[in-house]
Image 1 (cartoon, rainbow, N blue to C red):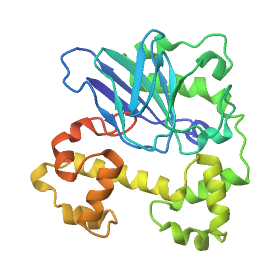
Image 2 (image 1 turned 180 degrees about the vertical axis):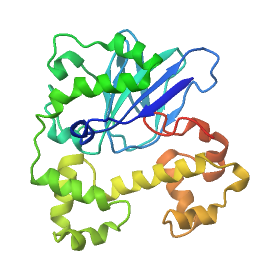
Image 3 (image 1 turned 90 degrees about the vertical axis):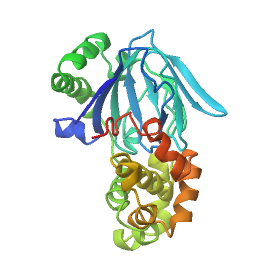
Length: 280
């Protein structure tokens, strides 16, 4: 398995796209055949060969198909079928970015599913060089990212912002450091107005998004540490849980694992799509 993550260089592209990433399975000997993807409030656009299949399972719902596809924000842990060789070139958007973009046949907001995408139609080009980009991504990630900037810029410069997206941008800047109940006072806006605009742009409540962000930060923190170095009481305090039982309940609810089981299986639950890809 090989992977990389890099960021857009063009500031206009970076306003809507968080990062580019690539992951490729080159041998059938990899043991991580059914990894899990953590809940995520952001949308992913995944570029891959036309005949390559995808399969995401959030029982009882399953999304599957072939070729390039959207992976919309998911509120539950997904199990992915990685039994076959594959290559994915990913474009991770900022939370709520799709609200401002012109996307054919897209009903906003869409959550908890994947859907095939015609890249040429999306970007209004005669043909989309998927295979060429994948080959470049294997050889030279930075060149690949530059080409992605060039391809996405003409589409993104036509994005349309309104007061709902403006409010949501301000909320997102404070969401990871401020209790939801205090956001209205800090932004001089009613809590109801904030919640309505945020839900319109993202499809989520502010609390849901905050919980997903906190989970991602906590799992990344844990992923980088040996089991013997993890103090669960300290982790609960560090990430704002009232106590260790509260942390246990939240982990069980969001990823279906207790802390003990997470430590045993954390290599299977880390966010490999635009998240942490390796452990030091």
